[in-house]
Amino acid sequence: MTRVEPRNILLFGLVAILFIGTGMMQSWNSALGIFNMGLVSAIMALGVNMQWGYAGLFNVGIVGFTALGGLAAVLVSMPPVPEAWAAGGPRILLALLAGAATIAGAVVVWTRLPRGWVRVAAMLAVLIAGYVIYRAIFDPARDAIESVDPALTGYLGGLGLPVVLAWPVGGLFAAGAAWIVGKVALGLRSDYLAIATLGIAEIIIAVLKNEDWLGRGVKNVTGLPRPVPYEIDLQQAEWFIALSDRIGANVVSFSSIFVKLSYAGLFIVVILALIWLSQMALNSPWGRMMRAIRDNEVSASAMGKNVTRRHLQIFILGSAVCGLAGAMMTTLDGQLVPSSYNPLRFTFLVWVMVIVGGSGNNWGAVLGGFLIWWLWIMVEPMGLALLEFVTSGMAADNPLREHLIDSAAHMRLLTMGIFLLVMLRFAPRGLIPEK
Image (cartoon, rainbow, N blue to C red):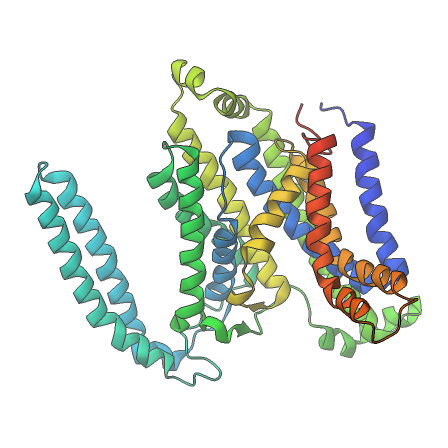
């Protein structure tokens, strides 16, 4: 049985104090909102820790895999739009099949024909012909779908299934994208993987923003089904009103807290299951093999280990966890907003969580997820209060005072940079380092 270090308990206790203090000083509603997003961030950090901490794979496309999870929440849980399906749904499916057949045909031509200009010409002919056919089918269908009540729908909708089912589907979407990237880039130098993941992430975000027929693009999808009750329904339920009266709480505010607690319960179940599975895998012969490959690929290869195959395996697993977190986050928000997916939040910040928490340690990644997310949210209001205190002796219209107060939003970037530099200088292996 793994021994729990008292230092680790202390660190988690200190982070818990931060959240409790937020609830006491501000509101429990705010504290629970930060806590729920901290749970989602911790799951993302777990996925990145699998890739980097277990195998040393540098993934800078986390935002793309997260966005695929968000798209899964729409495609699985939103009700279908019958008018859009009637206008062009079958033709869209036919176009996608034609595109897949084109790619498959090009692969067959490339593998079956002997090397030479004939193979190149045949492959190009298949790709060009397939592309022309694809566009001829796809463009009219897309225009027809997007013209169906564009202010409210203008897309195909989803399957109308329970939104919780979208969480594993989000992981599958991200795993599929990771398989494509891994088959192309793994086995080459690590910088090629970074370039490939960055490129695929930008492609995914561009598709989400521009393909309105898929997820309404920048018009956003709102009103996603929820796995927990709506606040307004709770406020009208007799049992909830009686419960609020019994504890002496306001029905409106308590309904919001109850919903956030319900989300927290679901998310805690998911993260505990992931931590248990991750720890079992890390301490198994498979986990020791992955760390051996990470530390010395040449020696591991000499011992008969298929390094590229194992890298692909862990890359898919880590990306699937990020996709799962993306679907959970979209469920929590209740909407899909493609413009909100930016690398600063969903790539850089997650990497900071892993580095600060402790690369290669699952509990460290979880700790980093909670701590860094709390700092990311709370530093801005704390920085504003600090700047107002420092400039309190200046005149209200002082240009320097106005500039400093207007720049308070950038305090979080400054704080993250300083915090990361301090950690790299004094605790380069993180708060909970790998053993």
